[in-house]
Amino acid sequence: MTENSFIPVIDLAPARAGDIALAGKQIHHAFITSGFCYVKNHGIPDAYIENLRRESLDFFHLPLSEKDQYRPKQAVRGFNALNRTIMYGAERPDYKEFFQIGPEFPPDGMESPPQNDLQGPNVWPEGRPAFRQAFLNYYQAAAQCGQLLLKAVANSLNLDSNFFEKKYHYPLQRTQTIWYPPAQMPADTTSITYGVAPHTDYGCITLLWQDDTGGLEVQNLQNEWVPAAPVPGTLVINIGDLLCRWSNNRYRSNMHRVLNKSGKERFSIATFYDPDFDAVINPRDLGLPEGQASCYEPVTAGAYIMGRIRDSQQKNKSKK
Ligand SMILES: O=C(O)CCC(=O)C(=O)O
Ligand SMILES: [Fe+2]
Image 1 (cartoon, rainbow, N blue to C red):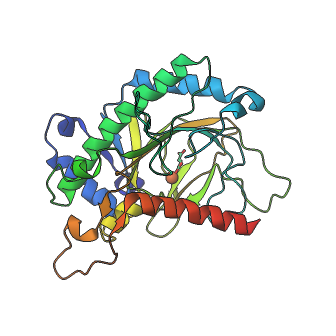
Image 2: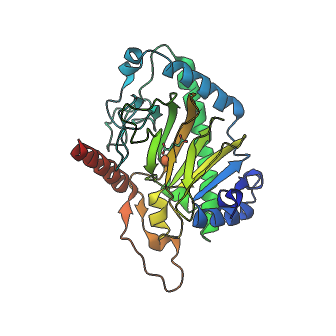
């Protein structure tokens, strides 16, 4: 199989014009095979990407002491420094910094406290209104693209095209700008310094913009690592463990990793576009093929994602 058919490029232009069927068919093929595809004509304006890239790099290039004022107080919002995230099962922390935002809660003008651990106010660097605006513009455009992709996913599973809308009233969308400094080999060179160690994503669907540096790799059907090389004008889309579970394992949540061997910095923007905290994830609702039993009990999206986050924190603690 060529890499191209393993991670196909899907044109979203017809879907954006209202014809979802072709995208549905292509997504079905991609998600039962690699769990990955590229999408072009995704609807996120180039200017939004460029503005967020420029604003984020300006921020990441600041001294650590300045960036660290914006470290998360809750819900991983804000600036996360180098060496502070470690993937489950990994030897050493990921060699990346990232800045994360999520849905603003409580919404402007409301006083109520956050109702769960994934909610909370965003953290914004002081004196950088253009950073905030660029982030919010991208965040909203990524949500629109996420909604369109989920229509295609619904079509791909022969569901009503609005199936996921009912599960996405206040989605758990997390958008991160990620900075991979030029990698340095650790003194102990027996283990590799990953930008992101091998992992699967926790949630339903991930939308990733990557610059032209390269370094993202995906496992093929022989469990070998193959590059998901940058394709100009596209996003990389992959599914996570929650959609795999929801689809009763028909769709593949595939292992991937980042190895920045370029000797240069790398920049990417990841959006984890996940359902409402309270959305019930029940494989039976996605229509089980004839004769297939459900492999999983229903679970809420929030409980599942929080459980995965807690699990990884505990495993990492017990490693130390
Ligand atoms: O930066 C990338 O290319 C991928 C990042 C990723 O896989 C993640 O953050 O889950
Ligand atoms: Fe990932």
